[in-house]
Each structure stands twice: as structure tokens, then as C-alpha cells.
Amino acid sequence: MYHSLVQRRRWGGDRPADAKERLVDAAEACFDRLGLDRTTIDDIAREAHVSRATVYRHVRDRDELVLAVLEREAHRFAVRMGSGTAKTVDDAIVDGIVFALREVPTQPRLALLMQPGAATVIPGAWEVLYEQSLAVLGPLLEQARGALRDDLPIEEVVEWVLRTVLSLLTMPSPVERDERELRAFLRRFLVPALLAPVSR
Image 1 (cartoon, one colour):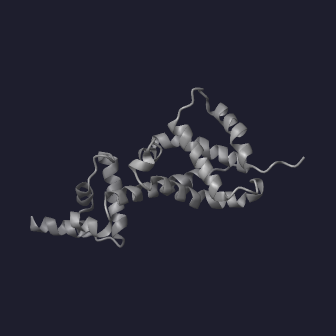
Image 2 (image 1 turned 120 degrees about the vertical axis):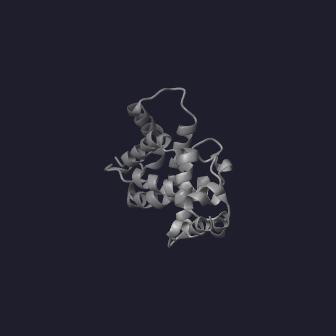
Image 3 (image 1 turned 180 degrees about the vertical axis):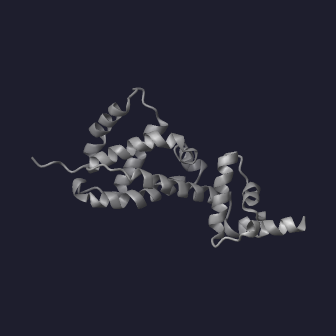
């Protein structure tokens, strides 16, 4: 019994270089196995092979670990969303939104961010998604600066695209559209608001 407790305190005999990252790994595993609502600090401590007190030495509370897991997942997703091969900025914007609408519902952790009221249920969730998207998509949009309207800050473009995705995910349209029709819809109403007028 004593040996087993010692092993728990020693991270299962393999003390990590970054203790918080190890706790985030453990939280991620617990969320996948038990679900976000059912996961407790005790579950995370057991998964990481440490005591509850050790967890609280590295994080303030469970919400901090929830946000850390969501931040990691949002970064992975933003990288995937920004790795398309679109040749023009309008194609990239439309492709990114369509990708998000198709993929987010299949990603349980990300889907949490897109539920109505997530910003209040998970304080800081919106900021995590925005910051990770800005970190990945911001430089890509900056490279295409000449195609965007001069009066639009990159930060606001990213925010507007995210708000569009959030709206489309949480408020299903009364009009059913296949992917081709959705792309046409976005090109009619979203793209013209972001792109610089084409000189004739």
C-alpha cells in the first residue's frame, strides 16, 4: 500500500519535465473516457498517478485543466483548418468555414466550445478558441493582406469568421443546403464583406 502511494506521488515512477503538461494529458484521457461533466480532480490525479494535493500544486482548479485541454485541441484544429491548399483568400475563408462546420461536430472536445452558452459554462472558452485561431490564421491572412479590405484589422476578420462558424453550428438554418449551396451562400454574404473591391 505504501509503495503504491509513493508511486502515485512520483507520477507512476516517471516524473515529467513539465508537470502541468502531464496533468493536461491525464485530463484529456479522463474527458475522453468519462466525459467532461463526470471527470473530477480525483479522476485526473489517479490517471496521472499523483495525489490530489499534487494536482493542486500545479493548477488552480479543474476549470484550468478544462481550458488547457480545450486550448490544445483548438490549436490542433486551427492548424488543420489553416493547412488547406486554396489559392485565393476567398477560397481559403470559405474552405475553412466549411471544414469547421463539417469537422467540429465530430470532435467532442471542440463541440463543447460551440454549444450555446459555452462561454458562461466554461469561462474563458471563447478566448481560448479566438486566441488559438488568431495565432494560426492571423499570419495566413496577413500574407493575403492585399486581398482584404484595408479598413479591417486581421483580429476582427478572425473574430467575424469565428462568429459565423459559431452561428452556423448552433443555429441550424431553416433552409437545408448541401455543401455546394453553402459555399455559394458564404460567397454571397460573407466574402464581399471581407475582401477589397476588385478594380475594373
